[in-house]
Length: 263
Ligand SMILES: N[C@@H](CCC(=O)N[C@@H](CS)C(=O)NCC(=O)O)C(=O)O
Image (cartoon, rainbow, N blue to C red):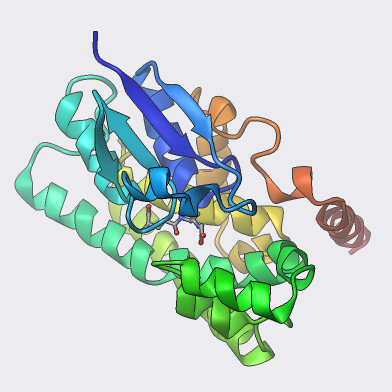
């Protein structure tokens, strides 16, 4: 019998991609939840399977597969006929991969900036400067990112830049939806491009950045359609959203909803 273990974290956007694909394909897996603020991802036993010290990692029959976009493609390779999310024609595959690259270049890194400032910063503020610097040093992939944030948070210029990149991501989605005729980014069939951008859009909605698609009804319709797919709910179990873990963000969201209703 084949064994599939997913090392991941509930609120990690990269993990959410993989949880969605596993659920969509109905592949049974053992979920191991890492506590990223306790440093589970930096322990030697985890670094042995993922030297980048980040989640997710898929362990298939004891063999590690790392990087969420790579894992998504791997799942298509091992289960091509179950809920396929990669088109068959080489040109269509190339188009899908180009979309995934754009998503990984532009909106995916950008959403980390407001996420860290709004939700994760207090975890680091509770540390001494020496502890914080040691933590930065221990991170193989996110060392410079964390140092740039520091213990006071990203500067306004960084936040503005991130918001610009997120807005560009939303605009590009609207173009893809219009070009392919929707309802999914590549047209009638849901693809890995949809799964790749899903956690960014869900996170933006969670932290009150949903106004960035106010002028793009096709993007809100896309989100509602995605939320209605059977794989969505088991992916976003309770605790997967930031507003479910951080009460101050839930308050902000409730106040923003009231303000929107009053307009
Ligand atoms: N390109 C990688 C990025 C993975 C990544 O950045 N994971 C984040 C959570 S979404 C993480 O593990 N962060 C822990 C840390 O920075 O220490 C992927 O897509 O798998």
